Amino acid sequence: MDQFLASVERRAYCIAQHAVGNREDALDLVQDAMLKLVQKYAKKPSNEWPGLFYTILQSRIRDWYRRTKVRNRWRVWLDRLSFGDDDKEEPLERFSNPNDREASELIAGEQSMDAIDCALQRLPQRQQQAFLLRAWEGLSVKQTASAMGCSEGSVKTHYSRATHTLRGHLEELAGDG
Amino acid sequence: MTDKHPDKQPVTDEEVVEQFTQRLERRADELDAATLSRLRQARAAALAELEKPAARSVNNWVWAGGFASASVFAVALLLVLNNDPPAGQGFEQMLADTELLSEQDELEFFEELDFYVWLEDQGLNPSEV
Image (cartoon, rainbow over all chains, first blue to last red; front, side, top):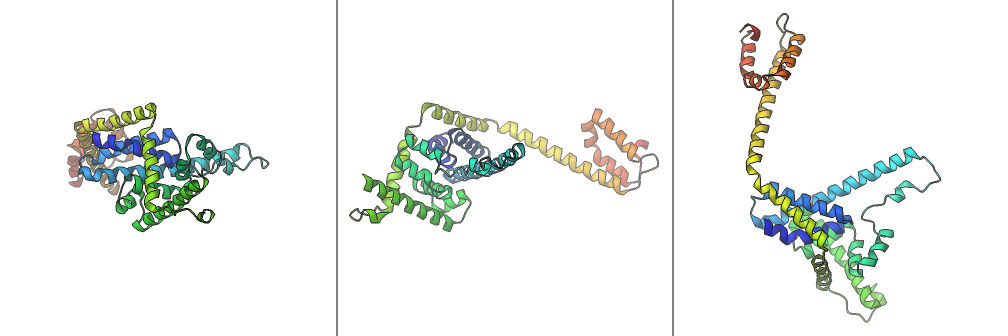
């Protein structure tokens, strides 16, 4: 188990970090996934661990999105309750979708990441995760579908769209170069 | 997008995967020391769970025992509520019983609860036994 966790921890962190966009939450998600795998599935055959581990991690990522959404809703509500000023900036604009990195976060990120990272970061979350799990982590379509909690057909669609978009970025980069 | 560079060779799916995974691998290899340390700590904390099977099995027994006791108590409560209590043994008595139970002998009472249920079934008053 130690060897397995050591072999996936860096990639798992990068996958989580791409999904949630910040280091602390990504580390927490990976830690939760490790803990759950050990607590619940340590006795399962080791060849099942990768699929199980990424299923847990993806489930934690989905929970993170749900919590963030709820938190933002409450913030908006509290904000309206506290100030109720119509002239102010629309509260929803201040709490954008965590996966929407078209704004300032992306601009700041571009300073530290190269264009390839940014292209990956710009993908819709489901496409990004399908690409990372399939292409990088090497999970099968079935394992990816199980991890992402969707059908194999959806995985193929997400993966194909991700590859198409990323190919466009590469061709653009090659053209600019 | 490709129309802008008609002289360029189209990028294949394999090339897309290769380029992106290479970049991702490099990024994973270049993680800073603080992040790596946190990951090691997370792994150690997870693996520490493997050292606690005995404690967990004891916990499971405690949960199982608690659940069984609660079930028996619930059945007893249903029996009491579905039958007319003997004179002077109504709700006040139950309250008094609860008060007593909260003070002491809880475990003993729960262990003997099925006996009390049986007494109730026989129409006997536990206080007379």
